[in-house]
Structure formats: C-alpha cells, structure tokens
Image 1 (cartoon, rainbow, N blue to C red):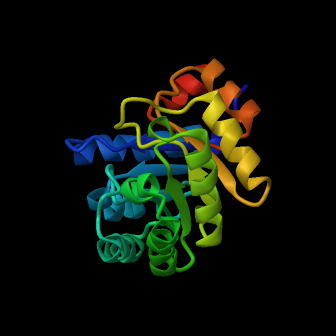
Image 2 (cartoon, rainbow, N blue to C red):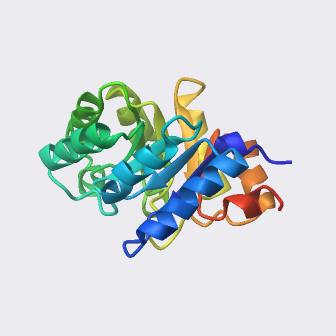
Length: 213
C-alpha cells in the first residue's frame, strides 16, 4: 500500500470552484493526505476548512510559467502565507536557467524563501524542458538559496515527472533536500516508481487512485 502521507492532494485548474476545493479538503482529511495544493485565491478557503485538521495547505507561486518578477513572486508568497499557506511551490525562472544566469536563478528563489518565513519552499524546475546538467545546477541553486525541496513539474508543460528526472534530482541534493515528483502520476505503480527513484513527496490530483483504491 502506498503512503498517503507523501501526497500533496492537488487541484490547480484555473476554473476550480469553491465546491471542488471543499471536496478536495474533505478527501485530504478522510484519506490522510499530507497537504492540499490549491491556487493562491483558494488558500484562505482551504486554511479555514482544514483548521484543526492534520492536512497542511500548499499553494503555487509564479505559476505556471515562472516568468514573473522576483518581487511579484515574493509578494504573492507573503500574501499566501498571510492567508494560511504552510508550503509554497514556486516556479523558478526558466529563462534565467536557459541563459545560464545562475545568480539570477538563486536570487529569484531566495526572494521567495525570505518572503515565506517559516513556510516550506519547494522549487519547481519543469524538468521536461531542461537538460540533465540544467536539472543538476537548478537543484544546486535551490539548495544555495535556502529552499527545502525541489519539484519536477507544474503539470502544465508538455511533460511531467519521470523516473530519470527524479533520480537526477535526488543525486544532486542527496538527503539534504526533499524531492517532489508531480505531473502525470496517475497510477499506484507510477507512485511507487517515483518513490523508488528518490521522491519523498508526490503531487497528484488522483490521490485515491495512487493509494490503489
């Protein structure tokens, strides 16, 4: 049986309704998921519904492109934390990665880490768009900037998580950071493959299915 406590139960569709977010929160409570991951505009609702319950509230920043000013990402982070977010999944600056401007990549992540305060920051690399060397260097930049996790994907690009990307990320960060696999993980077998490759968090909308139910 796969472990429900590794799952960020996710609903990031831009047209998600309040009723759908409420259902997501109920499922997280009932199934024992670690967090719900919702859009920034739904953080306050999720935090209110989950008050006093074990699941945490996760949200996204600079989503899904990452091509936002660092100050905007920081402001979005601060607002999300004020609304009750416990964890922040930010998209790094993909353009800066492609430019090889690693100082800009680090500074962008660091701005979010600072704004997050005690909230955990996960850095979304969008691995389907990067080379293995870029994945490794993005992981290094994330660690240097103070993030707690690296994450494969937004789920909005052409590709999602792969075993190879997860393994490369785990090799880059060792046991110092967490690794989150997200994007296209829809079966219990895929869940287990990602964990075996080194993921210690799984982001998915099909949480119950991943548990083999």
